[in-house]
Image 1 (spheres, rainbow, N blue to C red):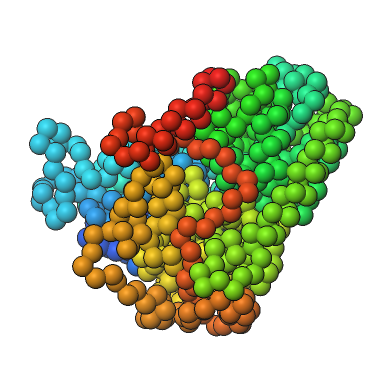
Image 2 (cartoon, rainbow, N blue to C red):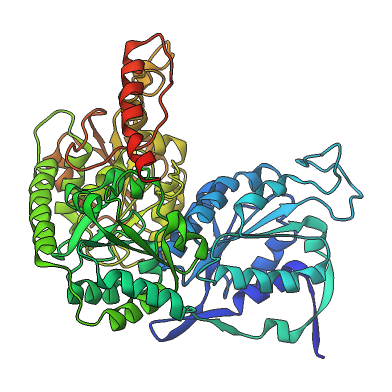
Length: 615
């Protein structure tokens, strides 16, 4: 056996550089690069190894560990999980800064390789700087917090352990069912230790998407259920996009005249202009989609986790005779809520169902109801996004301006707060993947870093980030990274002077306006935050716009700029799109001295009866 003597870190980086995939018929590296913020624990070991491989495994420097991990996750999502990135940090706070991002990737089933530095395996210098000591367990380190939010976790305490660890890591990162974050915790002394590695370990390997086909029994049950449906509805989740099944979904829906509703992750599975696309579903759903969901007797849930925003906290589906078919690569998701599981790849599953149901088509009355609801919804959406001369426009009106200025093919990026709900309803997506929302973990701070990751995946496309002032203040440093890397973004900051979304939720549950908007938080003086000056200090072109008309004009100019542009507009914290939507289960206190809370509790108890009835 031929061997090559390398440090563990050198072996790791060499291995990563040899992993490939096929995109559009071309063989390309599966890792788009490594994000790194160096410190003790990774600068001497993996830092030196990355320098040696900088030409075939590029290293990118960020300003915040959580931000760089968000960028890596967004890159994987924008590539429909076919390509990915790794992230490395020092031990201690550098590592734990990435845990939120790791949880985000876990919830959203997205691949990213976390490589945090760790303590000395030999323990000679213990306790080292930033080491967490457990008084009852000598094996515990700070990196153990990654365990519950990683699909696979390993701590490398000997250099040869990296061989099985990386092989297992790649199997998880590329598996359609188990896909998610992998954490390899790298003891800092072991990174520098040498070992005679087999050369075969570094042979080029091409990873392609596995397409799981359904079992005969599950497929027969699904076909039988759908064939007799009178009011069928498809819910398209992120699995449609990751499977590359958008054209298959379109053909399936058209052939069988079945309307389609989209989750946050699945939005853009069909173009918004498609006549069978009813738009968003659930808590942030359109009136068209939710009206159908309430009556549907058959729900074909394709590639979705069926979380509470999709299902209206499991109170949306009002037909007691309804059947759910869970078409999903992951059996855990396929069988949720007594669904008929159909464990399969979305593309393969849809094709085989189509063969089985033959000429079946939904009844005309059902498709006409869908058409009527769709027409009514678009009229309401047009009103919500229409230009305004108000001093403080709504989020919907800002969304309308961005859409008119940049078109349906621009990729919009957002994450937490009120904007995802408005975008889910109102944004009219064109191409698959042009709607990029992180709403599985709903992580404030994802937006700008996520936009950077999307731009790295799609450098020739227009990427626009919509972010509230609260999220902007939480994590904005990757604006500087975008400028440094020459990756131009257009960022629209909607300033409603606080956490407007949670303030509205607080009011809706009977709470007093408290600690959400800046004016309602404890203060001596309200801060005069100059977002324009701040963004400019990070190297961006920045401008405050005073109206929707000014915003549209500035957006047209922004696409001509040579670097990231930040546009700031003041918005109303209370106004949202009233049409559409659905109840969401947020527990209200059973007792309170405030009448508003008691009234909200009474309404809450009435609302949860729908959950009990369908339990």
